[in-house]
Structures are given as structure tokens and as C-alpha cells.
Image 1 (cartoon, one colour):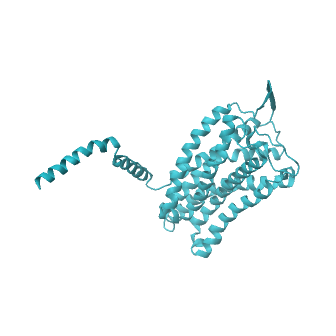
Image 2 (cartoon, rainbow, N blue to C red):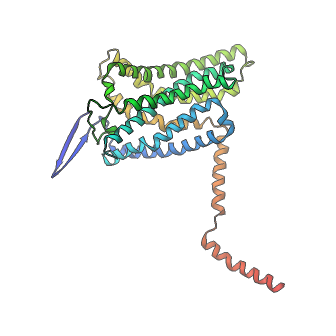
Image 3 (cartoon, one colour):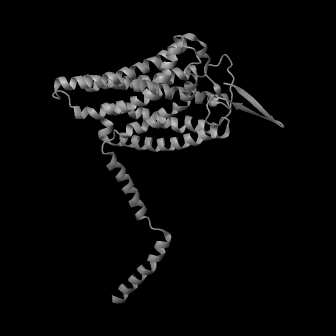
Length: 343
């Protein structure tokens, strides 16, 4: 990450070259448009998942609700802070505490999302082929709710402890994303390997093999049982929802992990370096695009959108503007006079 400084009279401006040919101002506008569209879609989908009883009761939607909340937090914190840097070329709040909070949120939200998608790739096998495992409240707690609680709390606790560890006096650069800060614990080869295995390898294996085997298992079971024991129409949307989500991770999440694994096994670091540089920028689109992958799984989507637009149109039609009210007053007063005369 080459850093240079440009002096002009009494001011010094630092220039950070991250190897990406897209200028900061272009990135700002790309992120602004992407974030607005994603935020609108996220609120729309989250509203229906939370307030539609049928959608809220479906167990397979619970993990999607949690990830959508994570996306919402990300789009209201990490993304705007990154956009501020792209626009003004300096961090919003230039303090070590803010940089640590920024890094903490990014680490927790990103890794927790990947772990949740990895878990749901496994859980779909249970919900489709072993639904008796979640047939009672006790079973649902241990098989369904407890893993979700553990995954969320794990990220908060681990990164809440490790992120502030700066006993090596890591410097903060306020013109670089996250102030170029990372915890000193990553200097430990053991912890770095553990983080890579649990946050990268494990999630990738669960997402890749879990979703692939689910499709194969569904096809084989459907042939053998000839649709007699499994309600395929009921589970079709559950499978399509998983595939739409995992396809996003296949494109944006798995390739950098595969490349990182190859580096661990001895691949020269210059191989794929340019791809890794751009991948660090476009992995934001895992968050931007995730709400759209859930959007297609909402039943009667067209009808719901029409109802919202119709409701909005009715509200505008019922609004009486002051000039319209003024024009109606003489008419009303004349009608009242006529009624008085008749009486």
C-alpha cells in the first residue's frame, strides 16, 4: 500500500494508492446509488418478513431476517463512513476509538453473515428432510434457535475482545479505510490460521457443499419417492431462496477464500494480486445485493408492491391543498346561504 505526501505551502496532503484504478469520487457515487437502492429493498423485505405472520413463522426465514438486520446496520454505519472517506479523502472522526469501532463493526457484520449463510446451507437439509428434528419447542430451540444465537454472540464477543488489542502500538492512518488498523492479535500465526479456518474455509465448505448437495439430494429423493413423502411445492421456495443467496457468495465470497488458501499452500503472492485488490472493494456488494436475493422469495410480490403504490396514490389523492380548500369555501358558504333562505 504505497503512501506518498504532496506538500503545498504549509499543508501536507497524503495520497494513498490502493492499486484500484477507480477514483475515490467515482466509488462514492457508485456506493451512494447502490446503498440507497439496497436500503430501500432491505426495508421492504424486512418489513414483510417481520409483519407478515406467515413469513415470520417460517423457520427458514429467521436466518434471513437476522442477515437483513445485519445488512441494515452495515448500510447505516460502515458504508456511509466509507463513502465519507471517498468523498473527503479523510476519515469522518479522526480518533483511534472511532477506527476501532469501524473495524469492529466491519469484522463482526462480515464474518457473521458468512457464518449464518454457511449454517443455513446445512439447516435446509434438516428442515426439508428431517423436519421431525424441529417438531417440538425444545427441539426447535436446540436445533434452530441456539445455533443462530451462538453465531451472532460469537462474533460480538470475539471481535469485541480482540479488536481493542493494540499493545503493539499499531499506527492509525486517517486517510485509509478503517485507518489501516487491525488488532495486534493477528500478528500471532496461530490466531490468524484459526480465523482463516473458521471464518474462511469452514464457511466456504458449508456454503459450497451444503447448497450443492441439497440440490442433488432433492433431485434424487424426488425421483425415488415420486413426490409421495415430501411436499415439494412447499420446499421449492426454501431451496430457491438458499440457491439465490449462495450464488451471491459463490461469485463474491468463495474466490478470494480459494485464492487465500492457495497462498497458504505456497502459491506466489503476486498471482491473483490484482484480483484480490478489487475483490476487497466489491465484497461490499454481498451486502448491497443480499436484500434483492430475498426479494424474489416473497410470495405475491407483485401484488404487495401494487398495494403499496395504490396506498401511496390514495394518500396523495386525499390531500387537500390550501388553494383547493380556498376555492371550495365560497361554494360551501353559498350552499349554506341557500339552505338558510329555503328554511
